[in-house]
Image 1 (cartoon, helix red, strand yellow):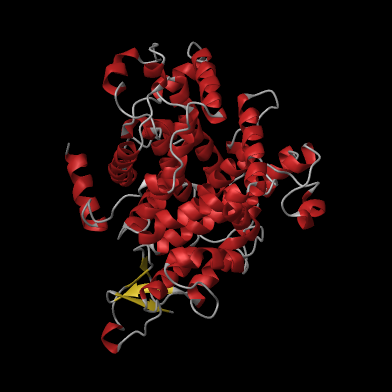
Image 2 (tube, one colour):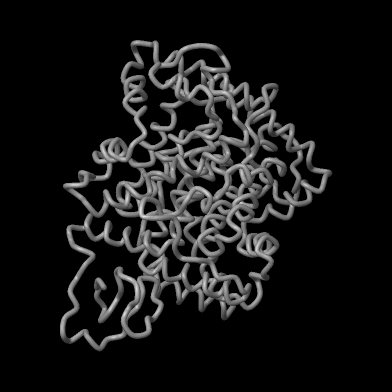
Length: 495
């Protein structure tokens, strides 16, 4: 009880009131539950059947232990991954988990108010894996899946804390989604919505005053307990991290859909819908947008997002934001390359031996992997970073990013599952970026630029003897040895 009270006081002191920021509104950027006559619903049904077949297995036992959306559930699960007992003598991580759970519940509740989908066991009037809880959830919406939301949210946060185990953490986070299907409490489409909503929530949390300091304190606590010291820099002058340093999608995401699976049937249905979109005069605008989004370049992303961001993003108008986007940009597509090479999935137009909406790229991409989509990853990554700079525009940015990814299905260059998994790749990259001191310094400059100020301020005479801190609140001995932005005398200063 004392630790719980301490956690509440700490979150108020470090991050302000629990109502200081609105949570993301899922209704503005998620597609909602699938229609009952859609191929996506059929896929949901077959996944429900699969889930029931797992209940008497070891995987079913794990699903049962994953069921309760309580902090203790996630602390225990990730303790097994990290090899460190997060439930004992880890107060900073417990406080951080408690804080995130508070906002996770608010986010889930808001989404359930916007969407309603009857839970599988309730729709079919069947027993679930956990019968004792059925009456509690029978009349509440299953969309989006709470286990997926919380599991992926904590996976992203722990990727920031323990990047040395990023792939294992993300694999466990993804597994929470499958557990909720096995339990019979959620559809597969609920899971994916939960993952996307989690990434939006983590971006929003990073706008809370002091949240980065809480993560830094938790990281220090983990490193002290585990003996692992993760680097706070990497990459080179062009990227914050090399592709090899980023999470490997093939280690934490599922295989591409088998051609005999319901998932592939869903891919085929979406592919046919894409063909209709680009040939139907009534959908001319959507088809043209997909063509406009073909170009994968930082300048095109800046042009696409500027109207939603609320300020022109360019090298001349917003140099600090552009500098950030330019260095983030390669990682969106780059993080998909290991997975593409591992599976070498045939693109739709190659497999179906047909043309695309944009023939000039067909020869160049014919022998490259389709799974996952680099365009979907890059667009979602850029939107998350920009949403951290301007949280008021988050829903509009993510809605546009979602559309950008769907354009790859419309043009015929990707399957729907390629696009879906591309967005999850972006979520993982976004989390990893926050372990880079250079990224944190540059996004601070970008935030100040967006607000109309400058992140670089001169040190006045009365501040010369004041203690210097990093942006994460870590005291610096003497003068900083690396150039960057610091806190001194309650001001941001440049050294």
